[in-house]
Length: 482
Image (cartoon, rainbow, N blue to C red; front, side, top):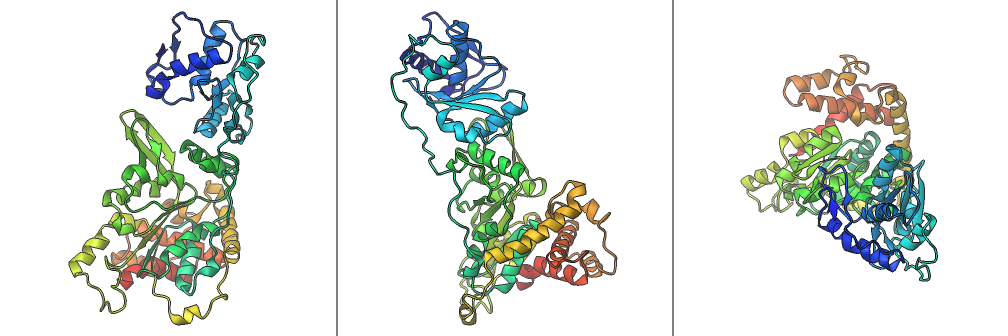
């Protein structure tokens, strides 16, 4: 009998444990056995408790020696094999932080669990082999069968392939520059333009411009992917920034996170330390888009459900792509557009003002001309632009390190208007825009952050009036074109 609010999958462990123990040669007592999962008020879920309950029962019956402070995480098959479970990496990380570094997992989870520093992880394929190492009678154990290969990940965890190259994008000098600024300062980006202008191509090349993740960031990202059961987390730490591009029909639970029981991470959390790309952004439900406003400010998603509350990191770069109207032809003179003015307003109104106010760069992407196609092979490649981005990030880290910050996008307003305050002569045009109501106070700070990024890309000590003007132009380009 299992106590402590087990869910259906955990409650079924009773039959898995009895069958696995019998087939391993160490059958459980036929007496009534009660296993209490504490704290009793906290709901338990999943099959990862199987092995821990089994070892506790075997120890209570003196079939094995004391297990000490060892943590057991694995599912049991009816034949006694140990099967992998998802979320092993964050579970091992939590175990080490709690002071329990000795951990036993299924052999198929060993590579993933071993990624955690200071963890003493051992992997086993069968319950019988594990019980033997903990002092069970070898005469009774069933050790004569070869465990099946359950490592379904293979090389799936390795990061294979290369990011799309910036050299593939013909023309679009302004958009390429905006993408470089976004990568250098971790700024959010809105690309508005007709179909076929290259908005999706540009967004897909942003992750290639971002620096590789450090050890701490890599552990965060890999832990989230492990919790979601993605094979990319099973062999090695993820060093490349993730790229998530959910379809516009995705629900709020798919993007923000949720589901029945304890909330699960969504696309926004899977894009942590990377890029969340929403193509055809006005086609998403407005409540889904507005739900992104909180993580854009805080870098964290807190999801409340009846079964509990979960907080997942979600410090991503948001990239939105939108057509100018439902038919996509309202560019230039717009003579071919079949949309009414009301249809256009309703279409773009799905991107609410508070959401757009949090998007630093808002750029109008024009159609590619024939002359641009004639320049094939002369555009800068991803490696060249990425070097400039790395240099700019290094300058930011040197300047912002004392504040515990990494990028310009993270700088709070009190620092921008305090220690990093610019002379009034430099910010005059920005102050004028704020007085006329063209910019909000939030927009004012975001333009300042972009100006610092432009200065870092240009190896300047501090932003000048030219940097302020360029930053203001990047934020207002889409509005001016509209």
